[in-house]
Image 1 (cartoon, protein in one colour):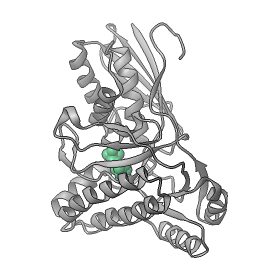
Image 2 (cartoon, rainbow, N blue to C red):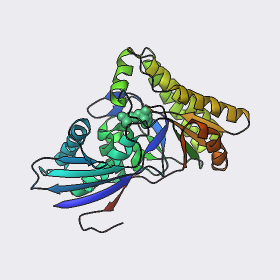
Image 3 (cartoon, rainbow, N blue to C red):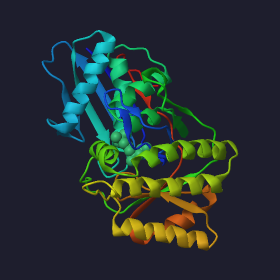
Image 4 (cartoon, rainbow, N blue to C red):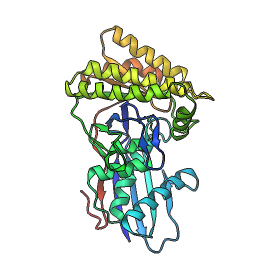
Length: 325
Ligand code: PMV
């Protein structure tokens, strides 16, 4: 029996991943860039044993048997294939973020699982290899292997599609949770529908590549204003692609829109804040650290507000010997 525990944090993309060019290998249609947070961690323990007759998944104290379980067991098959093992595993995972509400719990979930499962099955993988592995569970998880700001390269294929660190100015992120309920359409299904039915999808892919190039320049120049403008414009473009699906999908709620209006009002008042939103109604706002408290105060009427910053990439906290880091 071997046991390993890993901890990972979600990341929020400033240049979004939305669409796959290969669903099996989970290769993205374009590269993306994100901030790994210092909040809402997922802690996952993987225990492998020759005595188990099947995999097991306990998520936030509840045994899972349907979708979440199938995704995890398929992911474990991949790890077993790499390790040449047939042993089943017990996976226990605890998530501090509201699961499925657009706060990227799948990113921290699969990043933690990749690190814990690789260790439990005896694989010795570097960060790039762990990022590639996490990508197979959930694309955005590739970026949660990296501290702070990271770029996930679209790559030429499996070997070159991983995330790595990017130097960027210090930023705060204000997370406005307007609704913690599970989203109605999964990002996987909505990405597929976008590629198949949204007339804006080809333009989205081309413009994302341009946005990523511009964003990397802005990060290199430590140009917070430009980073912010690219972030908000890019998020609006993603939601436009999604809303143009047939049948349409709309993740932003009236409250989300009100948050974007409040952000615009802050900017008109001279406070630089810029918003983004994933596949859900919650809004993540970036600001300079000195402005974060003022931004948070202005957004309090719209939901629960939390100021977060750059956090660490996924890491092992204990392995088979029971030793901590
Ligand atoms: O990795 P997934 O399937 O959870 O997709 C994430 C998609 C977005 O969060 C909307 C964008 C992103 O780049 O994280």
